[in-house]
Amino acid sequence: MTTPLPPLPALSEAPGGRTRVVLTPIGAPPRLRADAARNRTRLLEAAARLAAEHGAANLTMEAVATAAQVGKGTVFRRFGDRAGLMLALLDHRERQLQTSFLTGPPPVGPGAPALDRLHAFGPAVLRHEHENRDIYLAAGADSARRYASPAYDFRLTHALVLLRQAGARGDLNLLAHTLLGYLDISLVHHLLTRRGMSLERLEAGWHDLVGRLTTT
Image (cartoon, rainbow, N blue to C red):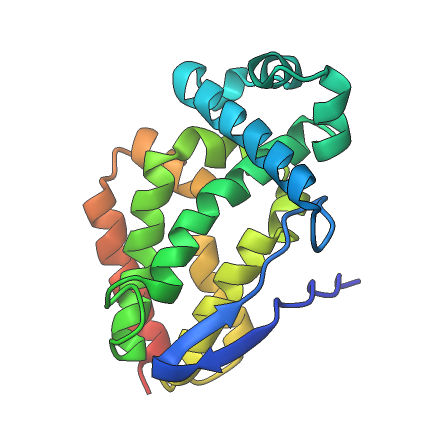
C-alpha cells in the first residue's frame, strides 16, 4: 500500500519570480513564543558548535545541555530525542541554503530562466551538504523522518516549481523526487568515499540528468 505524500508547504509566487515557502521545524509548534524561540536557537547554536568541534556523530543530548547551561530534560522536551535534535540542526543549516534559493543571486536565486536555476540547484545542494556532511549524514540516518521533514518538502516544492516553469513533461512530482534522490547525502557520500568519484563528476551527472528530464 502506497503511503500518501506529506502535504507540501504553502507556496506562492512573489514579484520578480520569487517563491515564498513557509517552513515549520520538525517537532516544533507553528509559532514559538519569543523566549522559547530564543532558547531553541541557543540550543541549536550550542549543538552546531559541538558538531563542528567534535563531529556530529559524537553529539549527545547531554553535551548540548551542558554547553547551553540547561538541564538535560530541557533538551529532550524541545527536540524529543537525538534524531529530533539532528533534524532540527539540519533545518538550522538548511535555512541558509533556502535563503540562497529564495533571495540569492541568479542562477541559484531568482532572476534566471527556470532551466538555468534547475541546473544550478543540484551543484548548490551538493556543495552545501558536502561542507556540512557530518550533520546531514547523522540526520539522514532516519529515512522515514528525513522524507517527512520540512527541508525535504521545501526542496521537493522548489524542484517541482522549476520543472513546471522549465516546461518539463510527465509526472512532475515523481521527476522532482527522482532529482532529489540523485542528491541523497548517503548516496553522494558513498560515491565520493567508496567509489572515488569527485564532486565535479557528480555535478556533470546532475546536468546530464536535468537535460534528459527536461528535453521536450
